[in-house]
Amino acid sequence: MGRGKIVIRRIDNSTSRQVTFSKRRNGIFKKARELAILCDAEVGLVIFSSTGRLYEYASTSMKSVIDRYGRAKEEELGANPNTELKFWQREAASLRQQLQNLQENHRKFTGQDLSGLGVKELQNLENRVETSLRSIRAKKDQLLADEIHDLDRKGRIIQQDNMELYRKANLIRQENTELYKKLYEKEAASEVNRDSTAPYNFAVVENANIPIHLELNTLPQESDVEQPAPPKLGLKLNP
Image 1 (tube, helix red, strand yellow):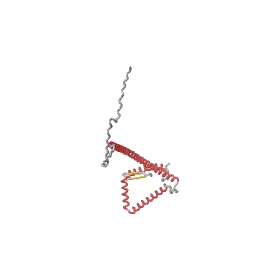
Image 2 (spheres, one colour):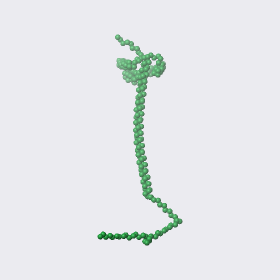
Image 3 (cartoon, helix red, strand yellow):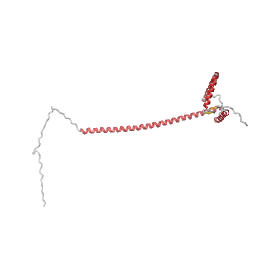
Image 4 (cartoon, one colour):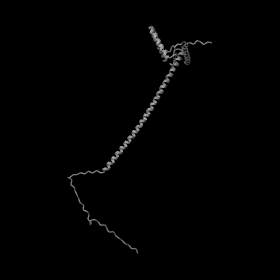
């Protein structure tokens, strides 16, 4: 019994979509290599996944393939001006279509214009929104963690600076204490020297108009001085 026909449309299940992408990507790369070898063709293949990852294959080198493509397009456009005009018209229409798709997806992600979507489409949109939210939360958590780490580092630096300033302040305080002590000892020594050199103050006043009185005191006469009584001597004999 043969395989049934697969409907070519977007796969809703993200796991099945990733598995299919890997299998078909390997298959198309294999076909490109076979085409380059069997037919001696220069092949270049570029694939971007839905997550934005780049996959590429070139039979020679991707730069040479792209350069050859650019030269071929320039020759084609330069040969016929109408062809160049049509090319840019197609490019403008493609860009307008891409802008319209982006605007439509943006409205859907913001919860607008959902009336034409079915259950599966809404579920798929919900899964995409949840995936985007998880990525946003992970990015936000990473940024917050980096900011916290940076703040911790700055806090440690500020703490070290504060400790250094506190140490310097203690040294300055000790130096001031030593200076006050030396100054106090010097002042005390100066006070002691001043008191020892001049314990009394004399004021000598010279005035010629003040008379000087001199008085002589006579020594007392011998008769006026009471003579001490002579000592009495007593002798007693025992029989």
